[in-house]
Image (tube, rainbow, N blue to C red; front, side, top):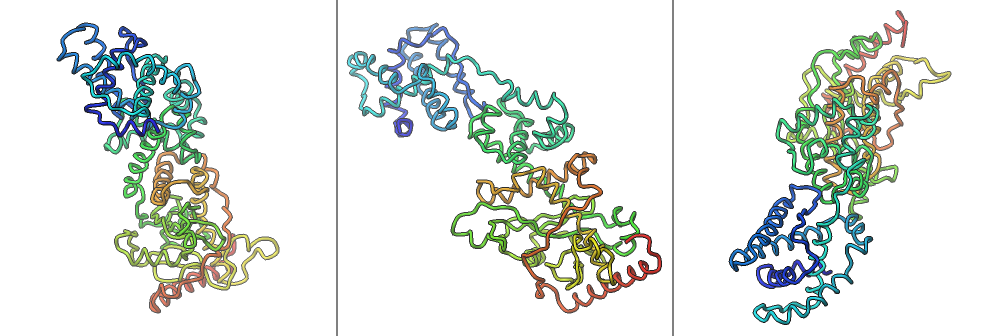
Length: 515
């Protein structure tokens, strides 16, 4: 309450006059001691405060007289103290709590004692109009007493926290960097260089770009709370929040560069396999929906509750067989069907869905219509890999063989989702951010996913899904949307699918070596 009241004071008159009185009467200040005001991030303006306070002390010791110079010196000091008090009000709860625990350095009772000792001084200053109520006096004294105490505090150790934490991670074992920053060191430094060279982020006097990015990666890579990151990096909650949002915006701005349309040549993953080539030679990628837990206001929860009863946002994603994302469209309500989201994307040119060249197509699951540009499995036929196990392992007809291989190729997007969520656990739980921030986090995570895939082919998470199948649960969310495709589109797509299935089955029967 005191600091709030202090914000309402007229800095130009009453507070300035009152602080001048405190300055002339306080016996606790050592004029010869260097004044250093410690802040979490020098970019917030504390550097200017430091210059004014240092200069003020030097001028006072050198020129004890001279009312004009002295008045300006006092005004500078008063303004600086007011700025310091406002900084205190904006500081994190953790830092304030730590200060309040140390009764020797700061307490309201000591502030009141300072006021009591100054009463005689005030009585002799009739030329100052001190119409301040009791609460305002306590607030001003509290701020001034806090300022005097913090200037005498020794610099806090930054190891193994703060800059020491960064040094420890970047100079330590590679596994430490992977664990804390979710990527290898050279990938981390490459991303920092990109953000710096393009002016998307800037170094500040208190926080370099490397530390700004590390703050962001610690939050999304471990789903950590702001308070935990404050302790780890030794910055205020406001500083952590500011750099998180700056980095999020910068990485999101890279989406056009990193989320690129797929190449038009035959994917190597298809070309090298007798099971897929030449049947799927015109396939350029996979499309599916991904549900991310969402934190939304109570009035919106019915729309975001999916069929499993979980609040989520439905994210439309497209990826290559190299496990890189092509397109991401987050933010849809969890209750929205996958086919409805795809229809919205195709109907809206502003969404910039990559153009599908004639004759090319994406693989989709049973939640989408089979139409030109999008090939779905046969309806009413087993289509999930787990259905082809045990005694019923072998396909019994052309449609089952087609569905099995279709599902094997489509598993690429499940692998991409698996790596994405394993690297950034914030996508597994609903973070306590505004919804537009939750949506942007998904885009940023996909950008980082692609950056890592391009820079480090042997990344440990990508390696973990190579050569294995990621389980795909049956899609319970929706049925095919028959309004999505015209009859002509359906006929063309159905004809292509039947042709592929027939050729595949004929080769399987006559030249069976693997299925």
